[in-house]
Length: 168
Image (tube, rainbow, N blue to C red; front, side):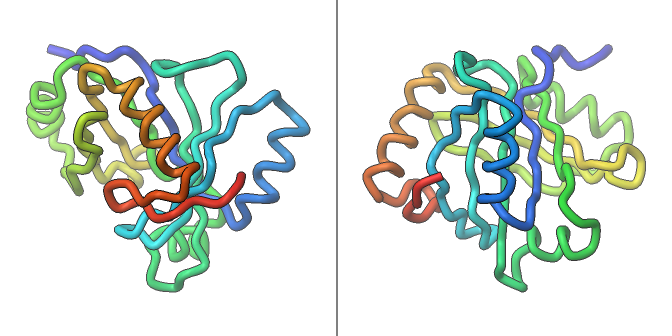
């Protein structure tokens, strides 16, 4: 039995310079980018980038940058250069998807997510696929929860391990 998926949810992109990434992408496309927040657990800045006119439920880029030598993002960019680290597929049932992935021999590396927004599970597939695989299941009302997180970050409030933001 295959995993029931709604397609790609988002792609993690690791860059050396968020500003240079933004400048080039704005020259190429009409973008809507969230403010940058600092994610304490990975010691990295993060921004969400969408094409204008696409809302919640449409694929987006989750962009990461770090100058901290202890950050896994910084170490990965030093090793591989700017790169895609995860491709995330939105699934109907994360527990069924995780059980199926385990039966397929995938090694789970973490379970992360934001309460009220989404559940996530990640797999070490970089040697096989060139990137790690992530499954995400959105919680009911996730679009409103994301808007609330973005509003709070814009006001300078920390949110669930995301530090104060700066303009992107």
